[in-house]
Image 1 (cartoon, chains in turn red, cyan):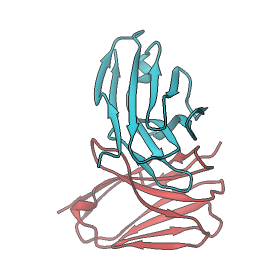
Image 2 (spheres, chains in turn purple, yellow):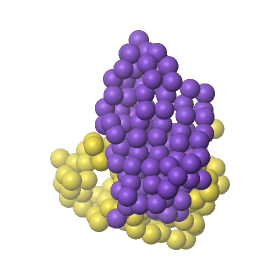
Image 3 (cartoon, chains in turn yellow, blue):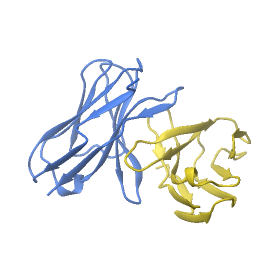
Length: 109
Length: 111
């Protein structure tokens, strides 16, 4: 059974700080996705990484896929209150997606 | 610009009652999914439909049935609700080589 473990589970930081969230597995994934979910809403896709070692940037967010395609990280530079939410990674064979347990981020003004 | 629409948004059932959760998408996606989200568990796949006319089990299918009514609609049925099925249910479409788009969820409580 493929599992995706995210760390940390909870993170509370001050506005302007940097942070990194991790998504780890013992299995290889053909691709990995990162989502952000806000209260009362469904997850919204941020990025998909496909190639081992790939780095993608989305404004202040930097996503990296591990060389072995078993892990990924999300780095946020100068966090803002608008970054508050639940961050989820997901991967797996086509259609049978596995989601991580999530990292709940709170950025304080 | 609706995307994925789920109904109802909230529901309270008694143990043993049945109900159907509805989902419709207007993005012409072939694939649709049903997930449940529980605290500390992330999202878990219940069933998916890779294309119209096909359905397959996901990680946690027991106690549920699905119907892919047409390309737009994918419903989830609880035949005899149990307290363990209290959860937030999300429908999604897309996936494969496309991103998944999620609805806003149905919050279901079973007493």
